[in-house]
Amino acid sequence: GEQVEQRPPHLSVREGDSAVITCTYTDPNSYYFFWYKQEPGASLQLLMKVFSSTEINEGQGFTVLLNKKDKRLSLNLTAAHPGDSAAYFCAVSAGFASALTFGSGTKVIPCLP
Amino acid sequence: DAGVTQTPRHEVAEKGQTIILKCEPVSGHNDLFWYRQTKIQGLELLSYFRSKSLMEDGGAFKDRFKAEMLNSSFSTLKIQPTEPKDSAVYLCASSLDWGEEQYFGPGTRLTVL
Image (tube, rainbow over all chains, first blue to last red; front, side):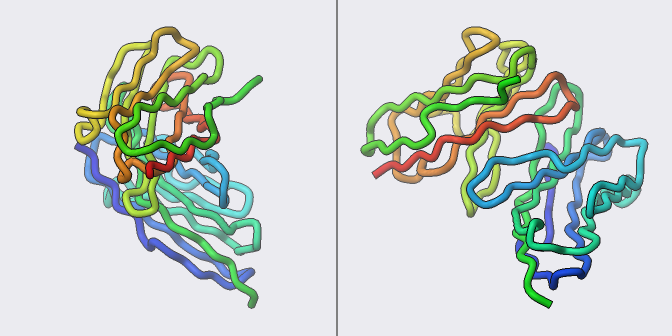
């Protein structure tokens, strides 16, 4: 079955700097890709959904890049701020009517410049 | 619209007890998921229902974990008998259809003594 590896597990980033979280997956037939954010004590909330046909998606304060050739999905926080303090999870959906496979998560901690 | 609701929010059980966790998905959603979240293992799929039919269950959880969906608006997760290693946050999520965003409930924090 699908396996998803997420790196790094922890990320300290200075406020205003950018940071990248990367997930690699194994199933070449994977079709839907998601990034979720989980703030301390809260549940998961969707950051962005990426279709297989798109490569770069921009959100508010972040960019998502999908590289199907390398089977890699990345989340780039463009200018870290205190509100980015959270755990981030990638998730991949392989075949039809299959559940999501989640990465192990990255805990992001913005620190003072 | 109400999101995913889960009850109880906190549960403390003695080893060997039977506990039942409850979930109400977003109205009209066809897919329902149960996950277990721990710091070490991350998010693990326990069960996936599609239109009330069980599509996937986490193989490692079959013996003591049983999820049911008797109608489209209510699901339960029974753990019988509980063990201390079951201490975790149990998340319920629902989505409109395959490939759509999963909406997560607030979770039930289970502590088994």
